[in-house]
Every structure is written in structure tokens, then in C-alpha cells.
Image (cartoon, rainbow, N blue to C red; front, top):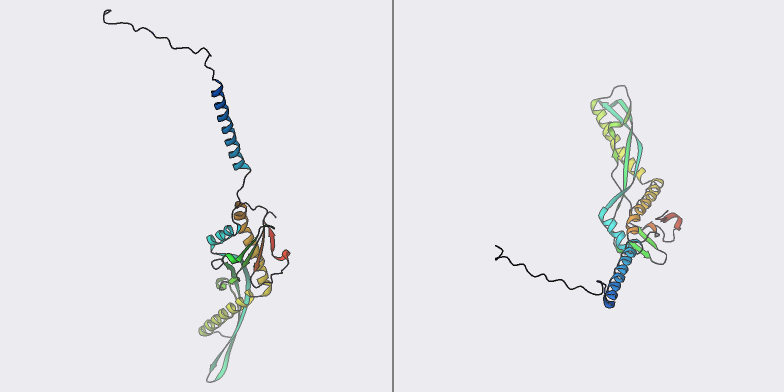
Length: 240
């Protein structure tokens, strides 16, 4: 067994006389790599915490509206009063007269339809960092009459079933007409327009900030309003 085994002669590895230190060229290359790594880290840090790329404010605003298509900006809740008189005749003689008054809770929604707004509705003043938005007219919904909560007052000696049905139907029609008229009241419309401006401002605040315009101002006006309307009436500050 000893004859079949032969120890290999060990070969000692060459040992560098410089103790494993890099030469001058290697040190320069290592220093260059470290400098490049430092520059890359500084750039990434600047990009993440300092640099902010500004987008297109008009495109950002249009995208925000496209996602919503329409928006209910105001709801008006009120009561309408309707009154009707029913007369029943027998043999051509008026014998029964019934009077009925109804107080019905009603509500009307005001909305803005963004689907028809194009790029012309948005004007960006880069120097003043101001976005002017021109809105289409407010749209009002059909009045919602809560007849289940109506208060009914009837006056008459005897009210037939047909008379009661006719009075109720007539009062409902009256209530809807009066609710529509109330919805178009100038004071109510002014409240709805104010709410619309504020709603649009809130909907544009985040998109403009994301686009890099944190200090931008937004002017919101309706197409039928004068262009020289005082800024105090149409302007809001995103950071305000």
C-alpha cells in the first residue's frame, strides 16, 4: 500500500513581496470607481428629495375632470306649498267644495358636466402660476318630492275618493313646478355657483401639486360671467 501511494511534492504559492498592496494604477482605478459611486448616490438623493419635475397643468386638470365626467356640486333642500280646490256638482249645482293644502319636502341637485370641456376651457399663466378654468352652465336635476313625508291639510264637509285623488295629483304637479322655480332663484343659484367653484378647486388641488405646482392659483368662472370679474369672487389659492 505504501508502494501505491506517492505523496505529491508540495508547491509553495508565490508570495508577493509588496504584501498584497495595489500598485499606483490600481489605486487610481479604485478611487475613480468610488468617486463615480459617490456621484451616483448624490444624484439619486437629489432626484428623490430635491428635484421635482413639473408636468403640464392643463393636461393634469383635464385628466382630473375626465375621470369624473360630472360632479354634483350643490344640493338644495326646501319645502314647497301647493293648494287646490275641488268642486263637485250635482244636477248642475255646485254642492261640495273641498280645499286641500300640501307641504312637501323637496330637493334639487346642481351638477357640472365636464364631458364637454376641452382644452380651451383651461388657460395657464406660467408667469403668474395661475390656472383659469371656465365652467359650463350648472345643470339642475328634476325636483325630488318626498311625498311620503308631506303634510296635508284638508277643508271640506265631505271629501269623495275621486276628489281626494284629484286634489293630490294637482298638488303634486304644483309642487314640482314651484320646486323648479325655486331652484332657479338667483340667490340659490349664487350659492350653487360658489359651491361649484370650491368643488373644482378641491378637485384640482392634488393633480396640480403632483404636477409640481404647489403654489399655483386657480381661477374658476362660468362662461356667462364677465371676464373682468374681481379675483376675490373667482379665485382660490391651493395652499390657502
